[in-house]
Image (cartoon, rainbow, N blue to C red; front, side):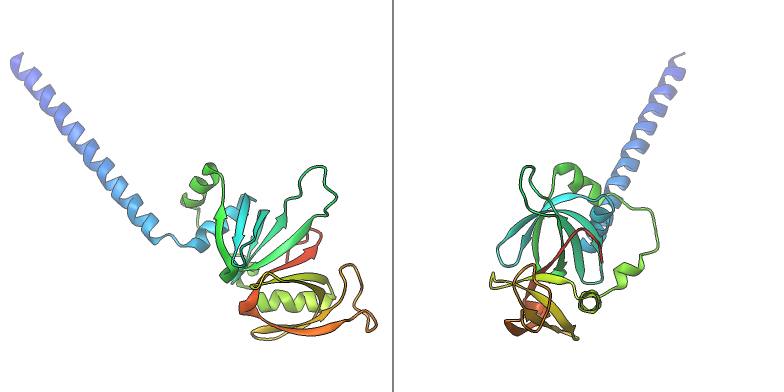
Length: 203
């Protein structure tokens, strides 16, 4: 009887030690996974969740948005319009280099670090900023371009090259007609902070 109790105690201790060792290994494995986690993977998860966020831009502005799509070097979001305001919904195309920070609720922070199931990345994730801007130029979409200096310029993108765009400047809401164009601007991509388009259509 005495030996039975002794063996039961030893089995209990051994099981506890195994459980503690397994928990330590799991914790270490999770620390290693987090250490390898890249911002891009978290942004992909946040876009998949259509996370509501406040994005801090490199020019000091903070914009409340719903994160929607991730590209090769950009992220797209729809503006969040406060109830009771007359502002129309719009889409923001933000170069990755222009994002200074993202504020989220705690649940989304935790969801963004969870291990995602392996999946094929979409074609959109291979599209560069220049590719998307060339599409806006082709479709003659009116845009509002925000720059690092804090300036907002309205117009239509005439062309998007390898590292810069040409903008025909005109009043917001005007079509790009020769008589409406006030100036032509060359804007280097590194100076872009956001390109806003009307509506909520994603690139």
